[in-house]
Image (tube, rainbow, N blue to C red; front, side, top):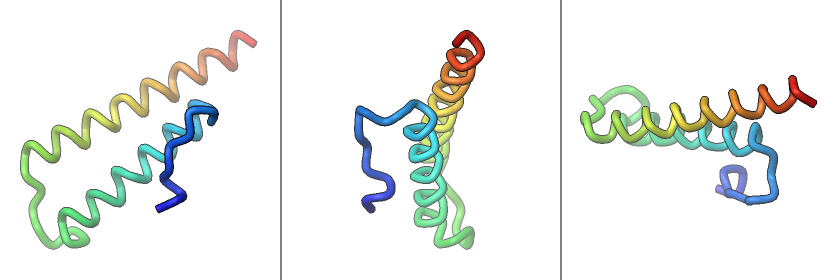
Length: 67
């Protein structure tokens, strides 16, 4: 999935968007498009990715306000 490929030279907001899309893809895939439950460990791991993505977006937003 090239659209989700990580490149370190990308802006934080682009990286965060890719992380969020990856989580959405995994949620759909792991739950058979919502037809199966998601295990607790998987849910916690995906939640951590979303939290880090949100932190990255918040940091990028602060940088824009300062500039």
